[in-house]
Length: 278
Length: 126
Image: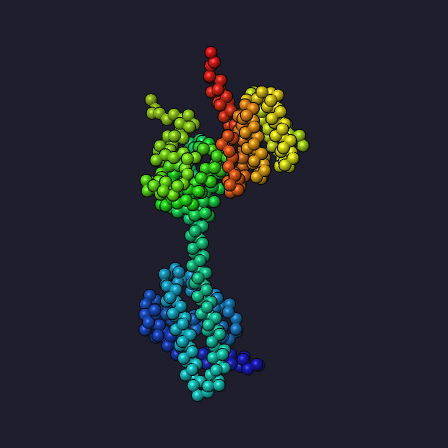
């Protein structure tokens, strides 16, 4: 048994012998800081045991698998129950302090030994903390990516309103990624439905700047190449002013104020007549 | 490879079945122009449904064929462009010049030309 292993043994032994006291101390300090308010006493008991078990196991085995699993669970729970990252990281820091202070207290007479035990304890404690923090960041990022994906797929429906007329209502801000997705979806729909007129309604686009105008122009050109004409509807007065001020050239766009007049124009282009039934 | 140039009614139809080399495109351009002269065609339909890739040379050639064909009196319609091709061309910053008309498929292209030619025929010279 190497010297290090010896101290690992000693440290885990020490923590195991004083399990109840350590858990109690942590719960006490956490409660004082008001971090456990949302949990019932049963949950607190479970939490303190889970954290304690994870720490001791990690110190004993030197493997971080258990810590990672625990951190992932915590992250999921934290996001679900709307616990803040701050609260959970403060909790972990507190845990580190409680165990650390306990170790100091135990070995205060023997500084040499204290150093060696801390040498085993500190890297493990720090690593666990970083694992927990990372798990939270990952969980958030995953959630954000999921939401973005959902938004992308939900936000660009292409509707066929007549045999040869498509309507594409755009809602929300348009960035490059979304613009690319819109063009692709629109072009495929044109080919699928054999449409010859497309109405893009941008009533729901809050801000139209040069980038968005550029995307629109590209979309129109691409549709034109397939043989479909495009009508833009629903440019708000404010946006129209912005576009003019920016000097965006919209001469190649056919525009109409409202979706209704856009549909009318499309009907005219296709020589369709809608009339009341007699 | 010889590409057939078909005549139907008053116009010619050229259908690209494979990607062409730059030389072949040049040769085709000459053939088309000769044929327009020979048949006195009033319209030209270029069908690129089968083309998965259109590079900048090809796009430029299409545009120049259209310009020269118009000079010879034949209206040009490009039909059947694939979405991916249109996307690439727009991303490359190439616009099909507005002297080229486009249509979704061959049938629509023919209709488009018929319409255009009919309105011309309506003019009566006294």
